[in-house]
Figure 1 (cartoon, helix red, strand yellow):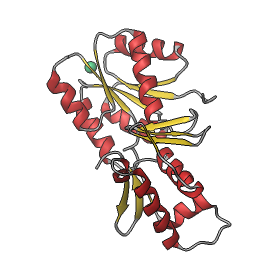
Figure 2 (figure 1 turned 135 degrees about the vertical axis):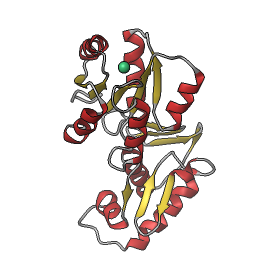
Figure 3 (figure 1 turned 45 degrees about the horizontal axis):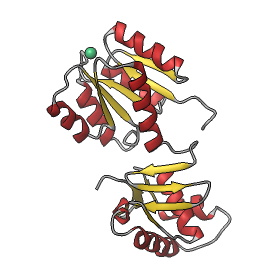
Figure 4 (figure 1 turned 180 degrees about the horizontal axis):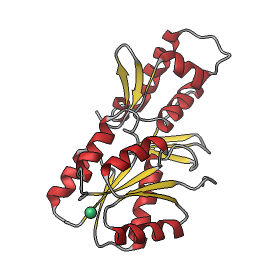
Amino acid sequence: MGVVAKRVLIVEDEAAIREMLRFTLARAGFEVDETADAAEAQRHVFERPPDLLLLDWMLPDTSGIDLARRFKREPDTAGLPIIMLTACSGENEKIRGLEVGADDYITKPFSPRELVARIRAVMRRVSPAGDDVLEIDGLLLDQASHRITSLGQAVELGPTEFRLLQFFMTHPERVYSRSQLIDQVWGKTVYIGERTVDVHVRRLRKALEPRHDRFIQTVRGAGYRFSPHI
Ligand code: CA
């Protein structure tokens, strides 16, 4: 577990609910920030980036769903985990919420324990540093034992492919140029050509077939991106 407390930003216009959320999360060991509307939330996310956004569906200015969509489209915030809060328990709301890229969805009223469990689960799923095991959509990388499984099947990787995958899984939803990848994975003092990156990416993709090879995406003219979203 990480030593630094994870920060959650609560976006909820109802003061009583906000208060309850803040109390619950603070007691669970999270650092908590709060805002009452979407405009303030947007400012806040850039000024003091949270590790997770707890976003109410019904807000006075912009709806929570529109705000979630905006964050998920913006490259700087696309990787920010979002849990939507809603008063309706309809399937439609759930589907719409997950469609815009919300990571989870919780219906009011909920118990504090359920809320904290959901937040921890989402953070585990997306969390970069801290936990030894990285897990993204059926792809598991154990940083302690260097074991990798894809849909439960063991994946054998060379040391460079391992570091490359580890870097990708801890930095999803961002495009990295070949030279940035060289600095991050091989180190700044090593001289290798950019084509070498392509060779290792190809090997890594091959090893992750048939499912997770698609997560390593070529972004033309820019580099590579790791994303579970096709
Ligand atoms: Ca509300």
